[in-house]
Amino acid sequence: MKYIYLLSTLLIFANFGCSQSNETKKEEVIRPKLEEGTKNSLLWMVTKENTQDTSFVFGTMHLIQKEYFFFPDLLKDLIKTSDKVVLEVGDDINNPLKAMALLRLEEGKSLFDFFNEKQKDSILEWAQSDLGMTEESFTTMFGQMKPFAVVSLASAEDMLSDSESYEQTIMGIQKKAEIPLEGLETLEEQMGIFDDLTDEEQATMVMDAIRGGDDADQQLEDMLRMYQSQNIDSMYLMIHDEGDVIADKESEFLTNRNLKWIPRMETLMDGKRVFFAVGAAHLGGEQGVLELLRENGYTVTSIKL
Image 1 (cartoon, rainbow, N blue to C red):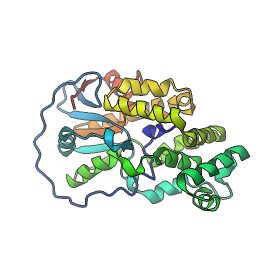
Image 2 (image 1 turned 135 degrees about the vertical axis):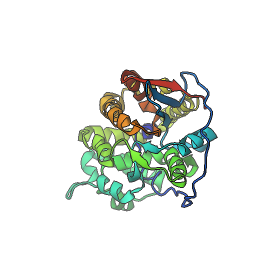
Image 3 (image 1 turned 180 degrees about the horizontal axis):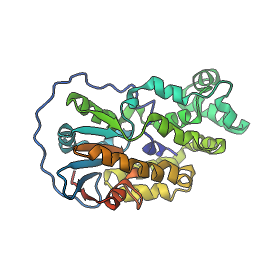
Image 4 (image 1 turned 90 degrees about the horizontal axis):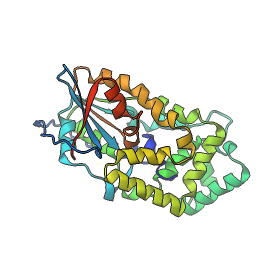
C-alpha cells in the first residue's frame, strides 16, 4: 500500500540525492519557550526526576506531500539548541552506495525469482505504465535488486516531484548548527527486517505497493490528514488494524524496534539534550516509544506546535 513509506527511513529514491546546505556557520540560538499541548501532538518533551536533562521526540513521515509538510520555527530552534540530533538511521541515510549494496541480491538470484508469471507480468506492466520503462530497462535496473527496492520506488513514485523530506530538513539544520548526528539503528538492522520476511511476504508487499488504486489513494490521504492533525494514536491504529503484511508483522516493523530503541535512547540522553526524530507510527500505542519511555521512569509531555 502507498503509505508503507511511513515505516521506513530507507527511501533511496527520496532522501538520497536531496541536497543539504554546505553552509556551516553556527548561529547563536536562545532556547525557545514551550507550551504544553494536547494528546494529539507530534512533539514530546522527555524529562526524568533528579536530572537536568531535557530531550524531545518528534514524529515524522519520511516522505510527505508539500501541502502537508509543516516545520515551525520551534522545531528549528529545538534542533539548534540540542547536543545531538538522532534519527532512525544516522549518517548512513546519506550513503547511497551502502544502501544499494544492501539492496542487491546475492549472485545468481533475480528479483523475478520472488514472483509467479502473473505477478511478474503485473510488475512489468506497472513499470511501463507508471514509470515509462521497458521490460529491458526495468530488468537492467532492478533485476538484481531485492523486492524492497521496488516497494520503496512504488511508495515514493507519486510524491517525488511534489514532496518534502523531514530527515533532510532536519539534517540541513543539524549540519549548519554543527551538531552531532547519530542513529537509533544501523542501515543493516533496518534492511534486515525486510530480509527476514519470507519470499511470499516480500512478493505480497510489492504487489500491494504497485496495485494502488482508489482505495490505496484514499488510505494515503487519510494517513496524511491524521498526520496533519497530529493524531499519532489513530495513525498507529490504522496500521495495526490494516490486516496486511505490515499488520501481521507489527512486532518486527514496530514493536521490536521500539523496544531496542529505548535503552539506546537512554544512553544517548544521559547528560545530553537530544532531539529525536522517528516515524510517527512508532510513537502511538501501548508499546510505542512514548509509553515505553514512561514505563522506564521518564515524564513525557506533549508540546504544542
